[in-house]
Image (cartoon, rainbow, N blue to C red; front, top):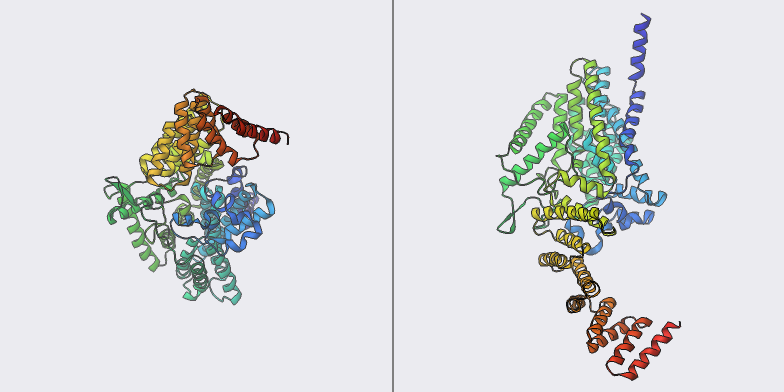
Length: 632
């Protein structure tokens, strides 16, 4: 009898809400603790490191809340239109600015706050889900189900992009604001609500909306909750609706009614383009729809078995699909099935139907069906919808005996946790992320281009060695893959040209820069790098190959691009002087003197050039000038 009482006491100790909350908090921290030493990565540059407003700290808050989210990165140049749709997500950007002002430039604090917010979100999910489940199940069962839901959500590896990547905080905060709003109302079972309840619920939901627009789907989720779990009047959704209306008014006043217009013909922002006779052509309607169905199935498969994961699903990691593809067909059938089942289940107020309907509602906004989002899919897009997957799995696990359910839950959470901790390592920095995910998204133009770029940044300062050569060849392979997927990818040609430049292969580098400029004649980076390649080629052939004629040809071409570059004029003067063409040498040294009138060395060269052309008077003047400058 005493033994049974002791066991009962232990069970009660372990499964009190207090210890579940502590356990979820500890698990959340452990899962992502290995990101605390990570650098900034991926889109962190857009919202933090290279964002003018964020870097101003408190001084940037006014601009953050009155301009497009990407404005601080792209500036006034209009480049913000290169990405699909406008974005008004000032809340998390404001958080980053405040953190920057208080804690400085280290990424540590940003990562720490992401971890703490995510752990808190899992706790809030547990508390909210428990309130909902208590309307359908006994208190003990409701607790088990809520624990299962929260633990699965917390450990799921597909959330690594939202947590390990600092920029992903917009997903966390959108979900946190939405769930908090539900929790405030659910505490009172959606009845006898006071003005304060409505106000606080609306305010926290408004925070979610200001974090990311996909929170707006809770305007539909809230009445679903009220209907399925509480059977209460529709006025329970008033705080969601009012907040959404206010948000849309503010958003429209700041960035206009921009819901995702795609720049015409821009492959990296419109994945539904194909190459026909060398031209980018839109998918047919059936091709687009079947490809969307494929990605929707991909979301389901990644929630069930999240491997392999990648941050990049751009073309052609996901390419054109037709319904002859089994996964596209499976996507169509499964979502039709989910829709029909949801309608049937909701009418009967089934708990499982809430989760299937919730999934369809929250996935809709990132599905490319409602409006284009600029890419096929992304793991961060499933952050909010995956709440439904966790709920359905929890219902399945605890359908029979709790002991079996807990055992299965422990195994699932353990497996997911290991996968999460391992996946976190990939998010260390851009180099690790891009070079790793390029092995998964082998045909993606974007990540192959990014991998080639970070390899180029890494090798340019390395001394010559077999290892350096191997890395450069790896970079060439990635960039060739990017170009194969996107033949008009100007940045890929530029980066490939840079790799050739680092190898002193100037002809090949120039060919890449010229190809890039053939696609976009105004591409300033290609123009600038072409100039550097021409000037460096001139120096290389003159100093290392002693081929002065070829050297002069390259330098003359470089001068056409930047006539006032001092070093190019100096090299040309030196080259022609050695060749014995003293008139040309004099011309370029005179230009150098105009560009740098306080440079003693150039007047020494100028004096020599005058002397060799027989102008002794000017030679003497230049020599005195050189002497006076040298004595300063």
